[in-house]
Amino acid sequence: MSMELLLGNILLLGLLGAAVVSDLCRHRIPNWLVLLGLALGLTGQVHALGIAGLGSGLLGLLVGFVVFLPFYVLGGMAAGDVKLMAMVGSFLAPTAALWAAACSLMAGGLCALLLVLVRGQLPLTLSRYRLSLMARAYLAPAPDEVAGQPFPYTVAILLGTLLSLFWQPFEHWQLFGH
Image (cartoon, rainbow, N blue to C red; front, side, top):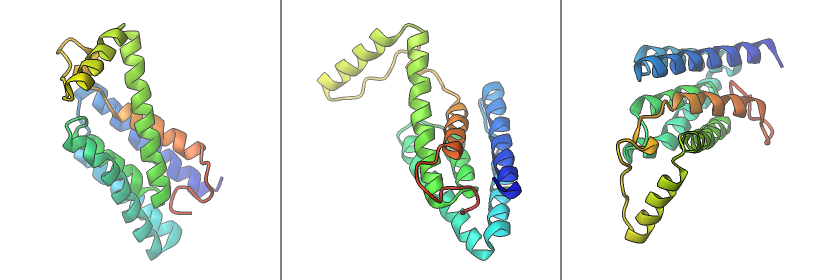
């Protein structure tokens, strides 16, 4: 791994770590943190690839944003999570950003399943989903149900991005558009 790639990975994971801490403590991701990450990601892209890197970073940003946007629109995710995934995308080539977003969504699903299992609410959750299917309508979770409580999705974004950086089943999916 080149020094440039290692530095970019450390920077990205450090920014995500700071976002996780903020989300766990304050239930917010500061805009200044996302903007700093966007500037660093795009600057790294330009440093690595010249002006073509700017295009790669902007496309990666767009991919991260577009993949997470429907979850925000449907009410299943906060705006800060969408902006954070766009920031992650700014560090990556577009295909790598898509992979990071997919891994983050999978990590989020696994985290949610683990929460439901740990809190002993699997039968309750499955029952609500079964009733939703039968009624062909969404039945919102009860306030005391784990599915009805806020989830710090930054944890899933960090885990998914980490996984995507080190497990790249396709060639050429690296940081800074390489």
